[in-house]
Length: 612
Image (cartoon, rainbow, N blue to C red; front, side, top):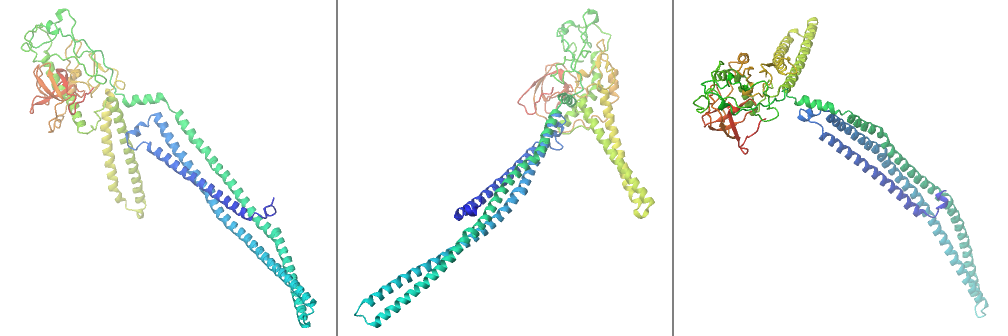
């Protein structure tokens, strides 16, 4: 079907239709362009979303991604980033393969359409000119014929009139002949114009218009084919990225399937395991003991001759409660101050062959607290000031071991790096020695010495941390020797960061305090342990009050003496080392055993915290 033969008289409608076709093509280009913008915006939002939830470097979040579930989430974020990249590919391909090509095609289409319809209008104008010429010759022929007819009638009338002269008749006859000749000329001209017009019209409707309309038809069909091809390309661009998007989704599924709840549970154990053993049974606190004991100057122990079972404070069954619950230690027996004068009405105990308890307590205060209580105090002050101990002694044993192991590994890596650098410098020096023209070997001596010094410093540092690590591993029950108890108690190395002073004492099966452990720890005390223990600082605000349950004689540096029943201010709670910091007045403050006082905290006081 040809537009030239079927639509020969629809020039204007074809002009409107082709313009509509170009408008449709431009609309489709606009649609694809907006789709590319949506894809870019979607990809940008996906990338921003993925970036937003990515773990920040050198932050706590980065440590959380050790867990398989967090690793799967991280894989999901990475896959979503790739997923976003595929949407960017869709946008780029649609822009290059559809919108750009179609925009160029539309411009060419507009030029071709303009040219074709210009030729059509030109042919129309030519036909209109021919038609006007035909009408003009026709009207002239008609006019000349009418005038010739009137001239003939006038001649006949003059010829019939007998009153008219012969000359007038002859004049009328000549005039009629002239008019008749003019009519014949007009007829010939009209005939010629008509023949010419018919020829032009035939060429117009059978040659020019069909040719022009054929070009317009071909142009329109190309537009239709091109928009169809663009729609196929539109689908293919999406189809090309489907396999890659499928791989992204497969990666997310694979990461989800890699989640291992058992592995995550094990990581939780490794992250928070303290290394302490669970608390033991709480001993019965016999408040009838003062009634049963006899008056004695120095001994508070029950007589073995009573036939009664002897209560042992700090015995084998005493557990460590502080890692999980609040300490509920049995109060230690009153020391030397709990004499008959302190308990006037108390019954006297029979004479014991053991060394007086007050002497044992004094020995305990001289040796043991130096190591554990005041070092714990030092750690507490350091933490309060925002400083972390170099040996990580503020951490539980298991966590401390992990930190120390990590530090040792880091130092070993740095040592290896420095050694590699030293080897490289040595090789370069050898090359310079063999080929002096390449460089001066002496210029590398300074660098070589500097690297060697760095290696030595790092090795000393590593040895220091390895010593701490060996100490911690020796203290952990699971990593040390099996024999960790003496006389039914934990060894003093078992839980260095949280044992209270009262619990750090160990008793022999007969209830007396052993001296071997105190002597062993006393050897480790350095003369400089207390040089920097207490620096001048602003007085701490009171966070509560306390009542002394027993009289305590503070004979060591940093302690304060209290009398049974005395009311004092609490300025620092027990941090797990068995000591509470109290104040009598602005000039008198110090530490007392936590089990010697009953604490009443003010919950609204600034800095009031409960340490468990």
